[in-house]
Image (cartoon, rainbow, N blue to C red; front, side):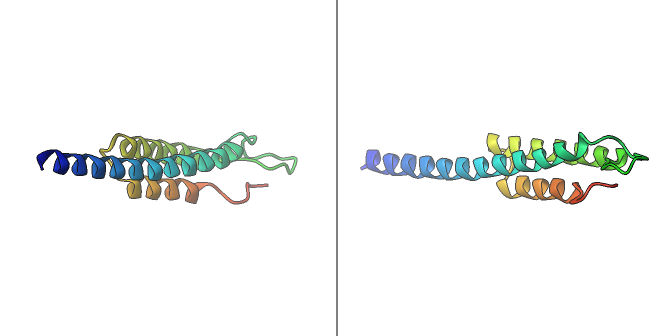
Amino acid sequence: MKRIAFAAIAALAACSSAQQSQTVAGAEVALTAAEAAAFQYVKLPLCPASDGTLCSNVAISAQIKAADNVAFAAVKSAEAGSGSVATAMAAIASLSAVIPATPAK
């Protein structure tokens, strides 16, 4: 009987771990997408660009870097099991919020 109970607990733990890995994987995908958008902004020439080309603001680029560091740490923490996926997703949302939809001109 103890073996059956242990096997059931082990199965539940494995299931829970697999579910968390799937949501952590989702957070990793979301972070990668946000980082791709951030990279597109940061690689633009710095403002002010006098020729009318799209440009990036140094202060916004610094905000992006700081938010990305927080989001990355939150995802790694969730991956290690010491943080929550919800915290990671909130950090990714904060990163996405500082990335301008339209670069400066």
